[in-house]
Amino acid sequence: MTARPPSSPLADAWLVEHGADLVALRRDLHAHPELGHSEHRTTALLVERLTAAGLSPKVLSTGTGLVCDVGSGDGPIVMLRADIDALPLDDEKTVPYRSTVPGSCHACGHDVHTAAVLGAGLALAQGGFEGTVRLVFQPAEELMPGGALVVLADGWLEGVGSAFALHCDPALDVGLVGLKAGAITAASDALQIVLTGPGGHTSRPQNTVDLVHTLASVATGLPQALSRLVDPRAGLCLVWGHMAAGVAGNAIPRSGTLKGTLRVLDKDAWGRAPELVERLVGELVAPYGAEAQVHYTRGVPPVVNDASANALLTAAVRMALGPGAAVPTLQSLGGEDFAWYLDRVPGAMARLGVRPPGQQHPHDLHQGAFDVDESALAVAVRVLVGVALGALSA
Image 1 (cartoon, rainbow, N blue to C red):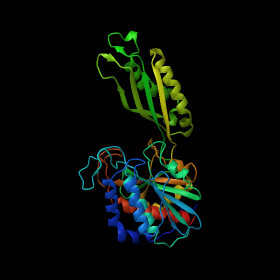
Image 2: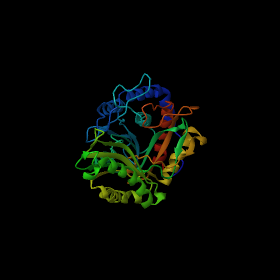
Image 3: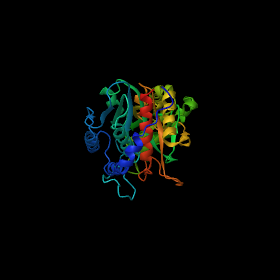
Image 4: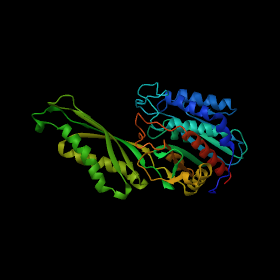
């Protein structure tokens, strides 16, 4: 791969005519969010827009998400990926495009990703290049192990030479793009632990299994043990998001549940984590006599950016936006199923700045009040068109 894509007027020309429509599309998506594997309206809308441009989108075998090739059909294939699902959160904003679906909102910017890849594809459909750009609108990124596996199972990565994606970053001002060679996200797994015992009266804990105490021991003891048994440089972090047991203050319950996520920066440590967690939970509950069931759901490996692909993406940012737009970023503990693609082909993901200039305390991803500066859409289209053309000419 070369690290210098050719300049093209495709993005600018398309945005002059269709930029306002792209913002309207993003707002429509934001107002009508759909959870993973239920993205039927979103899929139909994308099929309609792509078909109207003379393209031939193909819906994935699971019924949501789609793939659409743009270009000559000959030569190399470059993939641009968007995720189309929303999160199970209430939208807390007061805006005209607020979610109309209770308990569901685009709090991670997938509406932006979707609109940007669609815009890039429609701009590229104007022609003038050799090769194929494969637009992938995948479902269920927020579900483990991720909708990327559907794309892979359907065979849409076959023949792809490189893959690229952008992800919203509310910590970066709009107009900036964060880039990093190597691992840019972490491995992420889901963990559920269910403890059971005979129950009893809180006046006689010695006659039964003090389940709440045991649950608390696991909740605190497991992260502590992992921090001492895994190399700290692996960056393993176990955080609980749910803990539940019992209904009455004077009754020891018969069951209790912990739910959380285990994240780790190092791929080898990720591979050893399930067996270690299973062993430690058994040792932590053994003194109290509780039965433990460990449900360990494999999530995603780290997104590891290929150095050459990242250089190509960096050059596309600088050419589209200016030399100061490309800024370094750090590896995060967030998980991303784009990792499944990069396990098989070289590519890179970058962080798209969406913070309005001067905003001091932006809402973070996965918060119901999260929103973006919509000028980031044009930024994303320019970068995606640039990197696609650069990869095709490499």
